[in-house]
Length: 252
Image 1 (cartoon, rainbow, N blue to C red):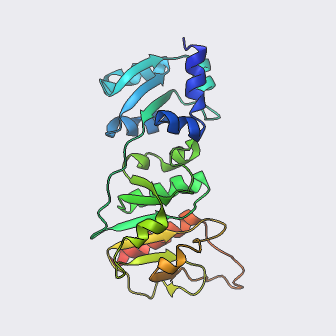
Image 2: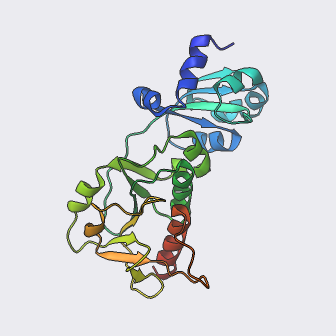
Image 3: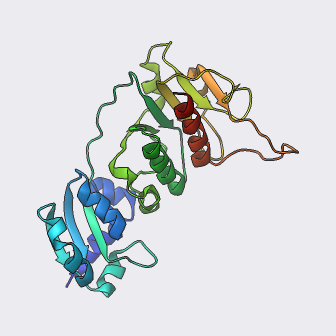
């Protein structure tokens, strides 16, 4: 049986300040924990129902520091899901790897606020073989529960760093390709030449790319609007990411 202190501690990780304080995050659900076990991430604790234990004890082996059986009612008390799904794991947040910008595509996220969008972008990056994402310091936390669920496991395969985006871009050569998605006055993505390396900047859902970052872009890109009356204002950030990466890979 879980103690009140343990329930309080795990429940507190729904908030970023407590996750950051202990340098951990929470993964929930059978599929997500399967992906976690297969990854190299360090698992602090797994809380699983009897059914999950019966099906997975051998698979877990020594991957977790501790595995604790819990009842369904206990799982509900610590879960962020509306319908808890058999298992919850506490994971130690890894240190991001240094990024070698040479000969690869990197996504940069500027002030992405919606955790579902962030998670979907991570999933899209994984699908298109983009191994690194850099996020502005004002982008939503990658370990937000909704963001984690939206990644569908891709979180464990994409290297994500939070940086001062403006300062990071300024360290690059002036000839290094810095692409940015803009609604107007960009080069038509279907017509312009695209390179196999560079940074692709995706701006926030409501404000686009920030005014500090815009001057650093040397290849502004626009996804043309084909609607009959041109009344659609913009694309969702994750959808734009999918379109852009698809075009880069198609011609790359």
